[in-house]
Image 1 (cartoon, rainbow, N blue to C red):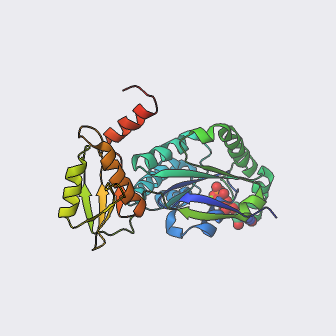
Image 2: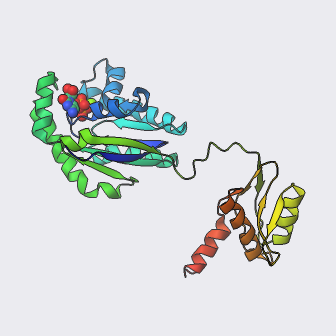
Image 3: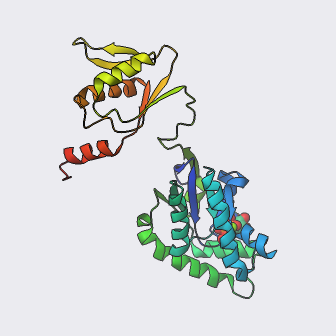
Length: 281
Ligand code: CTP
Ligand code: MG
């Protein structure tokens, strides 16, 4: 038996299954994901042609597949594409769809020997019209091998390659929330932007909002908490312009470290990081 391997996928994002016909994509999808999370090219083909094997319906089926995937991603739902995805242009369209929704996309490659895939099709009695199963599987297998070399440079966050039937069977899935997915936080929030080095004004503002400042032995404000459990959200541009950028950073860093504040960077922080790393401008 292969070692059980847990594959991390984005809890909200896109997962492409990649593998020849008969490699076990639909079986894998049914085992690890809810039926509604899986968008399958066969199902789309059936919906537009009343026949999951009608290859002439492929362009329409992929239109529908992309449409469905796009709607699910817009709604922030984990979506798994069950299609061969062995051709780079098919993958590229889905990668750019995920990007356009600012979501991550992973690939799970099911690399199963062609003879196993063919045997499985024989056992299940599945046909592809007049084209012999061997021809279909061989073509997919060739496309997959060609794809594997450059796959990691196609924009996937991760490419999980399951090499052989045992690795496919032993894999488990872990859904990973991204670090900026904080939807469990419900506030109340105090949202503060553009402090721009004005440490004194920031302290005054926080105190007026009911925050209690915490000071170090030298009397410098190094943290703050709110008796009603409010959370401050700093939405960018702490630095530059005003007289006391270090004072602002000291206070806000203390609040973030203590969990009483969240902070995202603004363009002025980006500029500071660039300057400190030696970049011009
Ligand atoms: N199968 C199997 N053992 C596995 C996985 C799959 O016997 N570990 C069988 C399935 O029951 C099915 C056939 O192999 O009859 C093909 O598996 P499927 O998951 O349907 O493969 P797909 O990759 O989804 O093939 P396609 O691209 O043609 O949809
Ligand atoms: Mg399938």
